[in-house]
Image 1 (cartoon, rainbow, N blue to C red):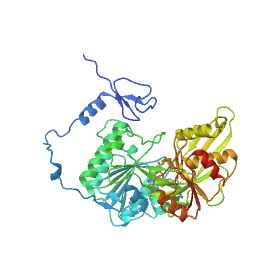
Image 2 (tube, rainbow, N blue to C red; image 1 turned 60 degrees about the horizontal axis):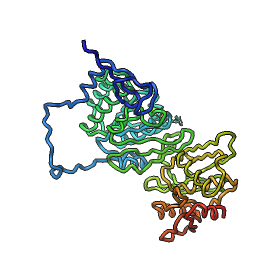
Image 3 (tube, rainbow, N blue to C red; image 1 turned 30 degrees about the vertical axis):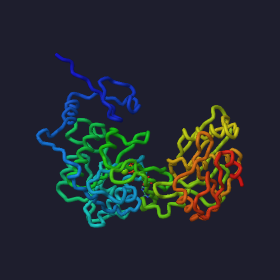
Image 4 (cartoon, rainbow, N blue to C red; image 1 turned 45 degrees about the horizontal axis):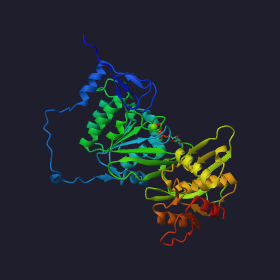
Length: 451
Ligand SMILES: Nc1ncnc2c1ncn2[C@@H]1O[C@H](COP(=O)(O)OP(=O)(O)OP(=O)(O)O)[C@@H](O)[C@H]1O
Ligand SMILES: [Mg+2]
């Protein structure tokens, strides 16, 4: 008798392999490969091919295709509308991920409440909490409405039956990892289950024209738990950032088929839930005098300029020098430190260097390089910088300082908050009212920075 073929699947990323591996070669997870049984292999074979062989599929000339209007409605939250590219798109499938307790259920229950209060029927499906728990949260968030329906269910077929019974305008699934489908033979939360359920929900969203929000758990490296393909299947992927001890939360677009991924939504967690942060621009710095090791800069989050404080701590190392940063890329910190050693002869190899960006914000652009350098020098010399001066510039490997994008917008923001000076690599074309000091290499910055 022919030997039955064995197949292993990684439970973290979905990689399939004919041999077992202790560490997945795709995602690097240890002990994540499980052997699929015959039933599972049969199921995979059935679902991976073209299903409807009888339906004739014909190509059309692109010019003959009518342009579809994107139908959107407001989520009742300006910040979420902004991240989504102008509101919720009918028939879209959106995945929202974030660490435990960051506020995924809170935000989506509030949004469900907003949409229901505007007169649309909304279904909130929870596989994690009881009806009583959700009601308690809804009371706190002021999300109650006769149009908001709750369902505590983990069986996908029962959920689909409920969706077929009532006409809903929006559906929230909390969370994708808790659901299970009778069509798939593996346990809930497994790669095969998550893939099958997402596929079925995607078809549901497209055929019924209903926007569906999926809440997703994340793994310890910060990506959504389940197969990598999950992010490809959905239209929009949003991640919650921020620290659960801090009240600010940032919702960042990672993928959006209906808009840009540049924008972020900024929310504040208070006793009434996650609310749109009213004045976000003064949340990431304090205007009192700066301590040694702090510097100010302006970063762009989408189209919004945000003034932030960056902090550095440079202290003598006992043993191997440590380099660690929160909110700033560690490799970039290494590069800036090497540059300071080479260009300014600073003996940073014998010092520990820590960088922190307060407020839970993550710097994803290079315009803050100069401010990071200023903060490091300020901590190293134990001399505070002027609380009136902001640093704007990208630093190259040669120590040259490069210009940043959207300079006028950044300078306008600086002026709005009453700051007077900026250190940057080139004088702006238009006079913004901010006194600009031009420094185009790192050594020159040191001249200006403690003025
Ligand atoms: N009564 C309350 N008053 C104020 N804040 C509260 C209250 N109850 C919960 N919170 C806040 O809400 C947060 C929990 O949010 P939520 O349950 O929406 O998180 P989640 O992202 O859905 O987490 P999980 O992944 O565990 O489901 C808590 O961390 C807490 O900060
Ligand atoms: Mg939750």
